[in-house]
Length: 163
Image (tube, rainbow, N blue to C red):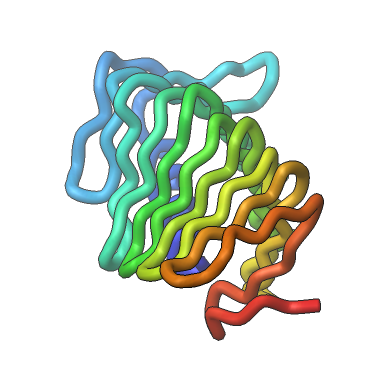
């Protein structure tokens, strides 16, 4: 997850040195149909087929706002994170890079080999590697009964459920 943060920050810093308004952004690390800098809010507004390439994976979505001064990221319109055997999807994402947290809402969907977790939302701390799934949580594993709960903690690095 640290690699995601670094790749996103690097891509956004590179954008900050580009023209403040242009029709499309395309390079091997970052692609979007449109992006501009809103002087009033101090935010970059990015939209349309956003793809951020990270080591062995990709982050993709439709709309985002990024505030470089606070290292905050708001993504809407559906987001996907895929790296190694992990796929994470959700309707919206909020990331605070300085605090190492990410929140996905609007139907969080986490998948990896032999594990599928769905929930209303998930909070993820990439320092501790703990994902806290909240609201209508369902854990599906082959050969095991479906587990339903209001909240479940899962360590993404060790692949273990936490208390």
